[in-house]
Image (cartoon, rainbow, N blue to C red; front, side, top):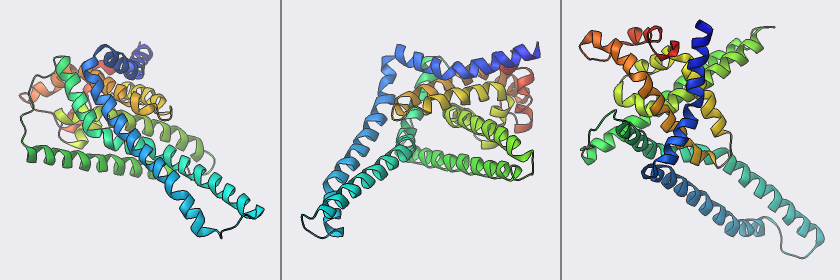
Length: 280
């Protein structure tokens, strides 16, 4: 029975990004939150690529002497190949990272709108300019916290890998689980941060529903593996994370009712999976 419940929770999390993409496909009013950041990112990198094509010949001309000798022609060709390869590598490495930063405020709006459409909340955004700036700054700080926690955990796992004989396989397993949980928090946090202020509470929620979170992280990682298209697929992960936590929300709120509707401390939230959807 416990094994079946674990598989149900894992499968629910794994298919959540696909469910998010399906929800987006059925809701054209949400497409702008996916398309606008993708267009901005393509425009940014398209501009960088154009700038490279325009400026690189001048750089080559400054580095190499003028002339029509065969070896100069060969050197120019080699420099073009190497320069283009480095530029392509830069695009591959930074495209998703920069796109994630650009998409962050749109993902926040997307998650909020998805929650509204599913009846989770109907509050209108009446914040002033400075309140929005403050919230954006807090979001940036939370992103820094995420990265810091992930790097710290990865460092500890790396140290485990130094243990002779058994360290390497254990480190590989722990590293995979840690990365999947981090992805679950990364794409689910757009929803969680609106309801649980403390970072520790949100992390405990992810851990409390760890099998669903690991499945969700795996589903998200598969979407992110598709180069360039991952920016268009990323909103599906955000939407799927929001829908997943909306499913889990009643069980977390049931725990919170013991304190008059307030969010419970991290230790109590961590007990939620015994009553929540991670076990059903």
